[in-house]
Image 1 (tube, helix red, strand yellow):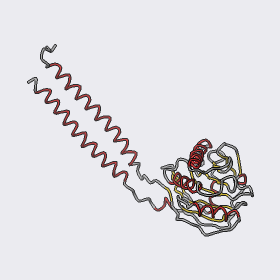
Image 2 (cartoon, helix red, strand yellow):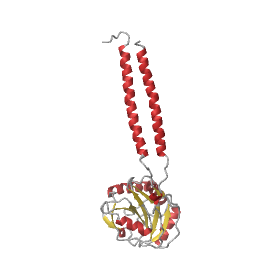
Image 3 (tube, rainbow, N blue to C red):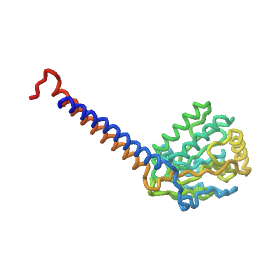
Image 4 (spheres, rainbow, N blue to C red):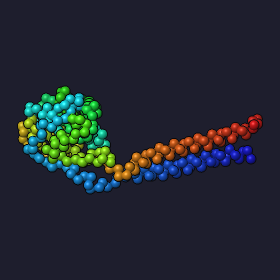
Length: 291
């Protein structure tokens, strides 16, 4: 009888393992379904487009802070001496912003022009709550990558522009609207649906070209800069891509939480069962008299 008890509890442990595997499999299946793409409602992307406006003037009086926290105007970037490449991004963007900036850096490393010497770059941060310090870290990351790839820039060659007070979006909207860059904010997911587009400006802030997509060609980018320096408009290149991570009911986060809690609970039960089995066995070892 005493020999059958450990076997019985050992069977319970095996059964528990099988049940846990089944539960884990079900959770894996649930999470896999959560990761499957779900169609995005049409309204989310309403207005998320680029309406090209060659010859348009950007508002040079739009007020921001740069990545150091200093108050600046757009005129401090477009100073009338060098053309400017403008991107619209934000640091917590789930995918496309990092890909776009990484693609820009890769192309910049191949051109024969240096940011801050022959042209400048301005990245307008779409999220008004993003602080300068966060923007500075994003800038530093991409500048370091540029230098790793053999490129370079001078100190003011790339400026990140954030909201002046952490909530005022007027300057962001003004610059975006002037160049025809449409984007939308989804409050439930705290994300922005936006295109991946680079806008070239002349030295006086006039739109000369649009470069769409996340992987510009170095030679095309160099010609874009040269034409912007000459204030010559040219046809756009690339294809418009939009960024938005749609999680309609939080299923991915729910699945991950359930997997974590389920694994912890199963491990706790299994440890308890094994401890009980070992305790039962110790009571029936030869030479051991139960108390």
